[in-house]
Amino acid sequence: MNYLTYLRNLEFADKGYLWILAVIPLLIVWYVLKHRDLHAVFSVSVGKPFFQTPSVRSKFRHIPFILRILALCFVVLALARPQSSLSHKKVNVEGIDIVMALDISGSMMAMDFRPNRLEACKNVIKSFIEGRPTDRIGLVVYAAESYTKCPLTTDHTTLLSALESVKYFYDIDGTAIGDGLGTAINRLRESKAKSKVIVLLTDGENNAGYIDPRSAAELAKEFNIRIYTIGCGTIGTAPINIGYGVQQMMVKIDEPLLKHIAKETGGLYFRAQNKNKLTAVYAEIDQMEKTRINETHFTNKSDEFFPFLVCAIALFLLEILLRYTVLRVKP
Picture (cartoon, rainbow, N blue to C red):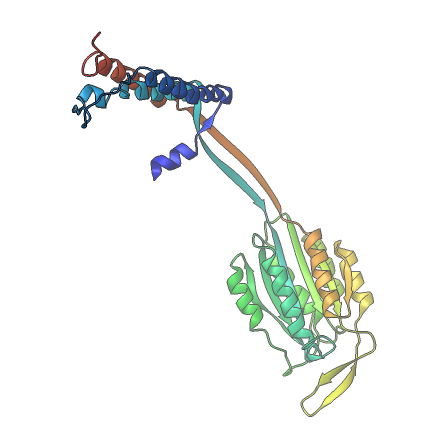
C-alpha cells in the first residue's frame, strides 16, 4: 500500500517524453503481425493431426520482446523525470480576543423574541462562537451584578456549555452595564492579542452597579479595546410572563449611552428588534472582526528517475541473457 501511495504521489517534470509511450501499441501490433507470417500452414490427409510437445524455447519465445517493451517503458518514465515532493505549510493565525457581555436581567425573559430574549440571544451567540474556531472567546454575564461565566479560551466546547447553562437573574434584578463592561475589560486588559473586542448586549438602562458605563468606556479605550453595543428589544412594549400571567412591559433602552460607549472605543451600536435582526447584527460584527490567517507553503522535490533507470537496465540485461542462452534461436 505504501508503494502504491508512493507511485500516486510522483510528478513528472518533463511530461512531453510520456508521448513516446504511444509507440508501444504500434510495436506490439508490428510484432504480432510479423510472427504470424512466420508460421507455415499445410494440410495433411491423415485422420489424426500431428502432435508435438512444445519445447521450452517455443513456450517462452515471446519473453525477450516483452522484456524489451517493459525496459523501453521504464526508459521513457526515467526520461520524463519522475519527482517526489515533500510539502508542508506554516499557518500563522492572528486571532482576536473577544468577550461576550450578556445581560441576564429579568427583562430578558420578555417574549418579543421567541421563545424569549435570553434564549434567542444564546442561540445567536452560539452560532457566532461556532463560526470563529481560532479566536479566544470569553463570556461575562451581568444583571445587578456581573461575573465571568467563562474566561477567554479556545476550548469552545467548554464555552458553549457555559453559555447553555446561563439563566435569567430574578433574585437581585437590575442592569449594571458599567459593571458588565468592567468585568469584560478586566478579562482583556492583559491580552497580547492585536485585536481586543467586547460585544455588549442589553435590553435596558444602566440602573445598578458601581462603575459608571462612560468611565468603563474610557478605560476600554486606554487598553485599545473596541466595544460593539447591541440594544435588544422591540420599540414600545413587549409581553413578559411575570409568573401569574402575561403583562406588557415598556422597552427602555438607553441608546445614547450605548452609542457613546461604541463611539468612544471605535466600535458601533446596533439595534435588534427581532431575532432575524439580531442574527444579522452578529453576522456584521463577524465580518468586521475577521481573523487573519497567513499560510506559507514549502515544497521540497527530489528526482526519482534512478529506480526506473535501474529497472530498465535490469530488464535489458535479462532480455539479452535469455535471448542468447536459454531462448537462443538456432539458424
